[in-house]
Image (cartoon, rainbow, N blue to C red; front, side, top):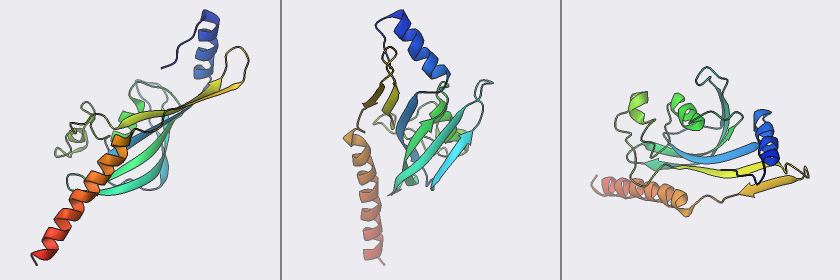
Length: 166
C-alpha cells in the first residue's frame, strides 16, 4: 500500500504506476515444481497483464509433491494478477482460497491453514517531488522458510520410514 500526503504527490505516484515506472517484487510459495525463470503474458479483465518470475528454491512435499519459492515481478498491476498467473501455469499459490488447485485439476491441492504464501517484498519508485529513488523492502517473514523446512522434514521422515520397512 502506498499513501501520499498531497493530491499532487498522489497524482505523481499514480502517473508512475500508469507508466510502469514502479518496480514491484513479490515472493510466493507455489504448489508443484516450477523450474527456472519465465514470463506469463496473459490478459486479465481484457487488459494486458505480464508477470516475470524466477525460482528461488524448491522443497519436497507430501501433499504437493514439490513446493517452489518464486520471486514474482509484475510488470502491470491487475487485480490478483500474480495469483491468476501462477494458477495459469498449473502452480497455485499455497494458501490461496480463491485460486486453488481445484481450478487446475488438482483437488488435493487445497489451501493451507497458515495463510496465503504471497508477500509484497519490494516497492521502488521516484519521490513525487524530488525525483530521488525510494526503495522500500519488507523482508520475507520467517513462516515462509519454516513452511519449506516443514514440508522437507515431513518428506524425509516418510522416506526414512519407508526405507526401514523394506
